[in-house]
Length: 524
Image (cartoon, rainbow, N blue to C red; front, side, top):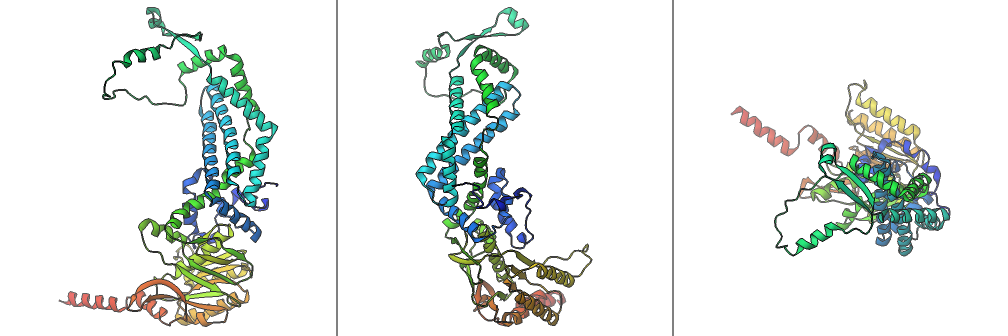
């Protein structure tokens, strides 16, 4: 099987990856927070661009989903995690070699890195053979690395470096330190001599004093700081040892030259790309262990979609840390239904529901598991969002004008395959104008056959067309001020706008009572 990429079935999606920038809708959907959390523990791999590229078709998504199913098996994941750890050490050896000042020491670090790379490849071949991955991506990589490990070039590199490391390890020499009066005056003289079966006096001294050993006492020894770089004395000793063992050190220099580019490009890419999956698994594993549901969604081109038990992943991460309670919600659209119109009281979870809708569609487009027990989601081409933002004096336009300009830009770019998510637009104008403008916008959305969610205080939109579906955030019946954060498929109750206005102008029962009490207190 021709292995191209563990992340993308087609190399087309991989083109210009490093130039990818964060999509515009990320901040509205809190996807920027998610990506930051996903990549935080594996920052050395610079994974962010991978999450900025939605896969272009269902086949590519299914390719990634199959890899995720493989990685959910402990033997497969452990084999790759072990390989990743070894490769980190290889890169550390390379980096350290570049920082050192003495050439011989640089060469030894480099050779050790090559030897470890060879061992890591052979370990991965063995471990993947035992784990038996079945996904197309990991199966193709397994075939590739099997063939690579059997290649003449790899076998020669492995044999040469293993033998060289073994030969370097067996080098023994003697130090004669001349501490005569002359040497103390002119500097200690150190002679490097070949080893000739001399006694190891340090071992003899330890044996002599072992019989006097009593119960362990306080340790007064001073721990010296260890530095990778040698000092000039050590470097001088090493130079003399190299002259005494010329052939071995000559082979070491030749090895560094021959295998300057020792790492296979596809294996190096695999080591980075596989972190895309592992990093996401790290993020959601604590949530799954705590009972939060995740599933592999089915992606479809038709607009019959659903999700059961879904939630906002960014919010779930915060609640998991704080011990808060997470409320899940369901949604579905079928036949001619296109837009979920969400109404209800403020602070009832409407915006969170809209974000969850967008998050799960985008995560699904990357081939990743999404929040929920099961899901069928739309294969979109673009996501457009319009969330309320603060006015800026530098914009030189009013909020209503800004809303209209942003909506015009969205409708101009959107296609029938696009998803649109709107959150509380036209709040800066009168109710009558907001209803008129919203209905015009809704007509344009439905004309373009867009799919999406519209959070609004305008109940009229919920029953605007057979293509609009009314959903509403709910409250505890006995205590309307207490939110349940459940978003149910039900008719708008006609109270959301009145309640939002009352809260905005502090005209609720609680606020009025507090104001009256304050007035009485000030009069007194």
